[in-house]
Amino acid sequence: MKSERKQLSMEKLIECVRGEFSKIADPAKSSSKYSIRDCLLSGLGMFYLKSPSLLQFMNSVKVDVASQNLMNLYGVSTVPSDTNFRVRLDEIEYGKRLQYCFDGLISKLQRAKILNDFKYYEDYHLVAIDGSGYFSSDTIHCDNCCVKEHKNGMKTYYHQVLAAVMVCPGIKTVLPLGIEPIIKQDGAKKNDCEINAAKRLLKTLKTSHPNLKLIFVLDSLYANGPLIKLMNELDFCYIITGKDLTHMYDEFSYSGKAKSYETNNGGIKRQYKFANELELNATCTEVKVNYLEYHEIPDIETSTKKKFFSSWITNLRLSPDNIYKIMCSGRSRWSIENETFNTLKNLGYNFEHNYGHGYKKLSVVLCHLMFIAFLIDQIQAYCGYYFKLALEKLGTKKYIWEKIRSVWHMVIVKSWQELYETVINAYTSKIKFVVASG
Image (cartoon, rainbow, N blue to C red; front, side, top):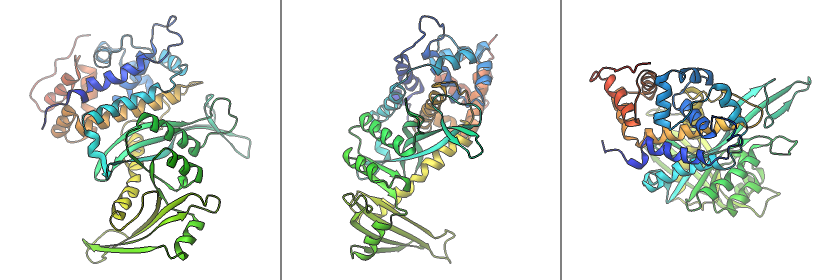
């Protein structure tokens, strides 16, 4: 195994994020001993450890060992109580600064040439965008909650988030580029929606990564004239699931533009039908898209796979030379559900757990912290020397996190390297624990 890349070590990743946290304006800097930076870093530590609740995490760091580790590894000066943590993060004006945390981490990967691994179609990177709900309550709410009013007069308050994640067929690692909360905007009476959030997120990503060549892979909700126009203006490519586009499909079926192509190998017949320069719909005839249909028919005698069909629209010109990769790119959209939201919901991050809702910004801030922690974890799992060494020795990520939590609460460590080495050595019977006093 290669030696550690210093710029992608945990120390450097945390240092990058800590620098951005330090730039966030602190509205109560002179009246509180708990800084915004320390509260944000403590929250990041909570999601790193996969703590099931804020109260449990804050109770655990009251013990000298865990408290000292939070200070040593995250650079926290004063560990806040759970109440102060909630109050301080509820009031911050974080602006774009939390987005800069994603940008800084992705820039490190770009400088280390790691992003080259994620190029799939020519020099393009695939970015899946999708939304998910993470909070719902009939009673608890904040100023930013969207509201669903029921016929019986009851109200449901909820939060959703739109995530943009770099994906690549054949690679399980995903890299979040940023998130956009689906919340009531300042001064708005109506609920926010996924399309409006997508417009904001696309503009943010263009600003954050002006030189990256991106293809956005999206579900059929985004086959929307104004959104496609925006992506064209921003010089983005897209591959969108093609459903319920009657006007375009009629032109595809009857204009004579459609071409067919078929391959048969590995016991799987792949049938393609495609056409270029079709009108999106009757109200956006000026928006031209290219359309691809794909049928996958396994040999019933030699394969256990099921038949598959899907279709996509794209602004990439289609030909027999590229339709296979376009198809694989379109199918990679599922990575945002399988490798992102399902991971956050089911593998320790407790995505749908209410760590603290607050009255203003707390819920949104915590969602950002969870995704930042997830991005750091994904970087370490893909190219972190010590994390990969631990995975090689211990077998599963779940087992690694269990052992990390054990060491965190039992042994004072001075560095991330020492933390991982203690985890690896203690559980391969090379050394014994030296439990810190206090």
